[in-house]
Amino acid sequence: MSKDKHFALSRRRFLTLGASSFLSLTAFAALGKNGMGGMGGMVMPAPSSRLPAPSFAAPLPIPPQYGGQLAADGVREFHLHIAAGVSELSAGLHTPTWGYNGAFLGPALLIPRHQPVRLWVHNALQESTTTHWHGAHVPGSMDGGPQSLIRPGKTWRYAYQLDQPEATLWYHPHPASRTGPHVYAGLAGLYLVQDGTDAALGLPRSWGVDDIPVIVQDRVLDDTGTLQYMPTAMDVMGMKGNRFLINGREAPVFHAPAQWVRMRLLNASNARLYNFAFSDDREFYVIASDAGYLAAPVAVRRLLLAPAERAEILIDLRSLAGKELYLRSDSGSVVPALSARSMDSDAYDRSNFPLLAIRVRPRLGPGGRLPDRLAEIPSLQANAQTRQFVLRGMAMQQDMPELRQAMQQVRHAGPGGMSLGIDGQRLFSINDRYMDMQVINEKLRLGSTEIWQIENRAEMAHTFHVHGTSFQILSRNGAVPPATERGWKDTLLIRRDETVRFIAHYAQPATEEFPYMYHCHMLEHEDNGMMGQFTVT
Image (cartoon, rainbow, N blue to C red; front, side, top):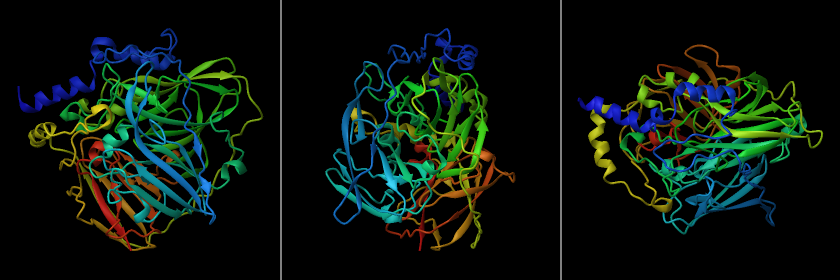
């Protein structure tokens, strides 16, 4: 057997998680089409784990909102504590994890627009880490990138004032070459920029009642419930799990009122894409993308989100009191075509599967509404030359010997002895260059408005995230982007053989000491070369 064939089979064997032995894709697709009817609300796990299949029973956890406290000088202050803990991610199992102000994930920060804030982040771990405010328009020194390392026992102080639209952002670690395992261990949380727009529009905004955070992640657990990160070298292509967590719990139930419900979707998985839909194939409305509201609601039945992308949606449950439906991922209709290699998709990528049970109870009050219009989206005009970026993937045959060697050197310093995986390898590139903390790849002028052109020449889809700003997508392969992408973004999916152009204004400074990053947000790609640095001065 040739080396290429050997590794293709190894990858397929792991990624499919033994799917052929427990589930036909036809049956799984039918399950997704028909909801969980006839299955007793059960999710079928991979046989590689001998854990019992979970049922949709536990209530959906709702991360607490945290509005900070006003200091004597009128500045709103927040305190985050990063520490190890134990979580019940799956019923009856106790999993060592990391979290902010708790064992897993973190509180939803309420950040007021146009008001100064201070945030203290203390690191009680034995590992250095950072905290990045993903999507926030803050200076490079406040961005929480790889240079802002919080060493064990130390505290990092952030101070800034936001001037950007109301939006669902998030925060997570960003240490050089270690972002993947730190997020996988549980470090992430919502960051809600607030300016009163949702109240003025009459949107649902009762937290945990009709305004629901939906943080979606996938994990692999062993028989004891311990997190398994990158158990094989080929997981460097993107770590995917066979257990699906919503707000840190597998197979939860949301008891929803029979009224308009707002869901804030965050794909916080390391590498998996989700094609969100509902089990009855109902229409729902996208009202916001990564960094703000759209101009008007967009009616859809499917919504594809790549890692780090967010969307706010409205679903009409007014006529469904006493009924049940499921938020699911219709992955099979989209994901396999995103790669030229079948081994890049696992059984879940080729199927439909449920994520969250929704049991509808009587309405609780007047509730919110679906507005006709949402926000004005200003047009940007470029005042600088277009920058071009080319994404390339790893060369399987050439890179495998290095990966084998790297697997022998992984550290097991995560929660419960979790592996920290392969990191720092030169595998995925941007403009044929790999991440180097000593190199500034691009230098921008403060106040400039630029068009960036991103071309994906890899064999699989990638994502692209830019720090310190939000952008507007101008075109995909020369065509106007879909209506759900015609708002403010900070992360985008770029398919293989696709060229995307976007425009952004750079209003915050970033020096060589604390530069901004641009990178793929499939975390194992970012940790193994697919990132660059830029200054704004």
